[in-house]
Length: 315
Image (cartoon, rainbow, N blue to C red):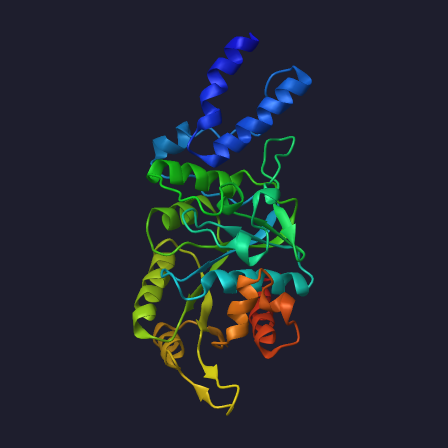
């Protein structure tokens, strides 16, 4: 019996999906320790009925009260930095907060929370759920915890969808008031899978003021509207640079783009985040602004946005 069991599972140890390899290693260890076979609890839900209906089952994330998506539909506008600072701001307001990195190909959360490296691999619970990593008072999960930092994830769609499903529904959050989803760029399969599988309480759209970024942000707004996800508001990032020498503010990417678009689309402007080198430096150092400089004007803007969102979410 033992030979048959491990002959079936042996290919899993070299599986391309790191989540499968990780689960295999933990289960093999438990089997060896207890000699009772692999745990059977925590198995994925039966998809047969769901496939017959043609649409995935939309459900909440276990032990999480509110789930919000932070999206931009475009890379390079500071979405991940804002998502982490919002999660940290919720924690400073006294809420149990977490952040889920749903960007399979380019995870940023490990760097932003100083949780990179092989010493920060998540453990598996007794119910075969991934246990989030914690830093600065918030819980987090990311594909970046399961693959080497320099490894490229070269997957086709089916593998991406399977990994995403595991991140969405096989993590033991242990009770959160709010979970922030750091969405990947674009409006394709991953975004649709998230909106179809998870009950989102709202979406926050991040953009810089320039038109080329706003065009993609508008596409993101329209995507969430089509899937009936409430738009909580927009954040204008990199809105202005204040010269440290002369104290003059320069609008590097424009100044009114997001504000103007909010008026056109009847969306609330949640706030402006300035273009400041310390925000970048703090992020690269793995100590986001809300933690590194809690009394700075920049941190106060994140806190103000988070306070507004808690009211809109009914927390």
